[in-house]
Length: 540
Image 1 (cartoon, rainbow, N blue to C red):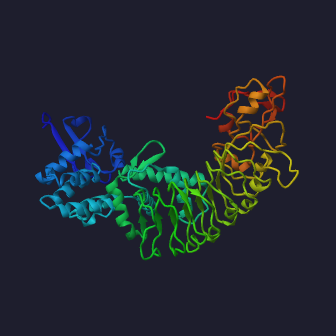
Image 2: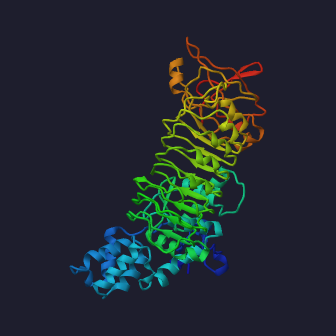
Image 3: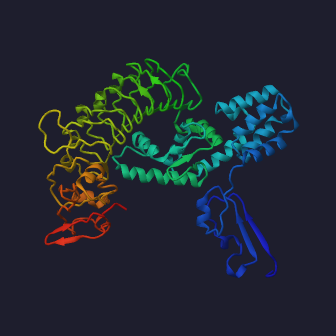
């Protein structure tokens, strides 16, 4: 027995197996025995301490066509069938089980059957193709059923709302997730929700139901996407997904009343319809429609349960007054939009996530001081932004993340109704975890109470002029969680006299400043009870 070499194959393993319990020899005393495990979960391989892991990728276009042609037969080489067959094979996305199933179902069929199959695949409705539901979808459902909880399943299904072969931003999923509350109606911190969503995405990718697409993005295979859209109603999600298919007009269907999510992103709409009744709608994704988009004044009036609205990268002539009817909306994404008056946004009292990133926004309206539940405000890349009324930021008492990297008009004292925001307002915001702010007008010295620390990114400066043009305060990004409980860390400005650069002495109580922050300093020069942070201090 010792001289024999044995190969043991354990196929389709879904949980850790104790090899001793089933009598399979392994380890140093059984070097002649090799064990191969196949699984659709990378976690199983990790739990069983597999020495080598080989991920079976999808087939290349060339290999996909070769396999498809072999199984479908000579008919795919005929003049009238060949272009259709190649399109059908491409729609299988290199997934072997889909190629085998579809090619086998179409073998020996005429052009009408082939054309119908291509059309059904284009519409993300392949269940009419023989074997797709019974073989392919049942196989995918087995993986889906092994997702541990409703949260993971719901997030997986939500990813089917994006167009085919679309790079899905995980950060977008975080912000949608906060709005939808599909993990429970809790007042969870943004960073906690971000950690949770990233963990869920890792779980889904470990079952190969999502595909890693770089550090911050994932993709969903076309066949997996079709499967998700098909089974969503079983889990109380009725989706209308017509994303990225070149629509120029709003879909003409009898009713929208049962839809929970509608995705019409990446199309070519010029005008939205009037008076839609969507009482169950929770998420509406209309981003990237490329033209001046006319939104009727009553468009949102029948969407009283809407929680997530994405209108990013559209040229909006105006925000309709019916936006004020969205009393339950928590996430609003207007990134990259051409916008007019924003005052109506101030009426969205439950809003938690607002992105005006990369818009033509010039002024933040005073009505924003009503956004008492706002947790994240993104004003990055707003190059024309010149006015944030004094007191607005101070009013956002639940704000955790503020991104405002192009605003330069920070002021210290309020002198009139048109006065701008000042840094002292940030002191009232005890929940901060992220702050991205650029400061260039440093000719004032705000009085910041409490212990102070300077966190800066680019401070190798030799003159006041250079300081004024490049100084960037990036405090609290990210701030260790224990710092927010004591509120001991504040933004501080550096001052530079006209005759050269000097340090600004700051009080620094080491017992109250978290060690994670103190340790990132290159050194601290002691001056009695005060300490001076050197220029080279930078965020990790």
